[in-house]
Image 1 (cartoon, rainbow, N blue to C red):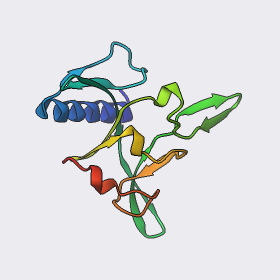
Image 2 (cartoon, helix red, strand yellow):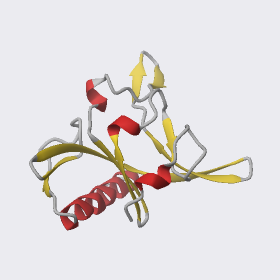
Image 3 (cartoon, rainbow, N blue to C red):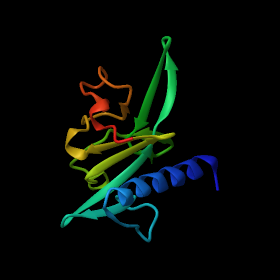
Image 4 (cartoon, rainbow, N blue to C red):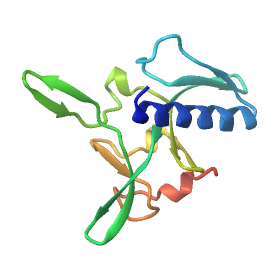
Length: 137
């Protein structure tokens, strides 16, 4: 297994552990490339959960913590990344669950900045939102 896929699998397990420890039932899909990484159920409600592993990037003397939301695909001979779009069936998850080492964020889909390829998780100031509001661990 490639290192990036191993890291993603570990992040999904950390996310599932958080959901289980917080009273959810967790259901995993049979296929790997579905619209959500798993489904969580609590209090009569199902939520499609998309898990992303955050990573760091240095730019202009500042260290950013970020997640890439856009999907990468091919258009002819070119690789293109599209922006996150709540109207696209591939982006119709209910919860974005972000993992960075032992930090965790639970972000409802309707507060994710639309039209972005990348979302920052350094707190207040990027993309017009404060990611600290969604920290759960």
